Length: 353
Image (cartoon, rainbow, N blue to C red):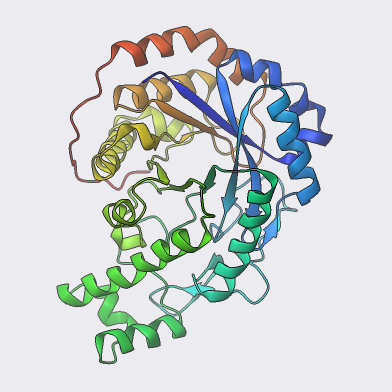
């Protein structure tokens, strides 16, 4: 499988910001073939639908394949661009905020329930009517923050519903302690089905969706990759979880090893490298040097990835990044062509950031 490079941009910025619009040739020379447009961000369109349609048309006229990327639930803070304090962090009207295992609200996070599913479904149908057939969800499509703890949404509604499922009343502390293995498994089942339901109900007929799995994301965070594969075998792709988006985190051996373990474990759970995507992210702005950005791509290719998804939050990669990628493109393509896809293995996660 040849190398496929994807990026994403704001429709509004593509149309109104010359920094973006005049970079299309640079992106093309750097090997970018597919561009996902920012779509629906936890209850609001990132750009006016009219701008999204115009941006799609512009990109396709330039020869790019297009898709739409949503930020469905919220990251729990400004994970898009910390240099922009104006980014809206309010979840959708009538949406329910999640709670952690201590019963505290987690700001800018959403419990998966009827209202938000219906709103997202309507938004995705707007995109479908524009002609979009490829969707992706950012890695906030999870029910918990990064870490090895047993997470999920512990809001009052979820606790009451879970009690009715298992037939008895339990406390947040009982679940989170993980002392009762049967209880912990039932809790993870309950949370994982929520994400499955979200994907099943918000994916338009005939479209392909995607989930960006958080670094070390698994059933503890509501992400059950085998469950998703069973129910959506032909219309769901996976960005495998990485992290280490800055030079300090990426350059140390423990960080590098943690990336490799997460990639390999997630790829093994998916079972098909052709539907796995990298998370080739630099965040925040300029935190990962162009040189290390390229090194990260080499690691991803050696792990068996052939779909590279470049990400930079809400800011736009500047010339040094596109120049570095253009210069390295032939080497990366050669590496992809000559490196065998390794056997799938299931290394244990290491919780290193």
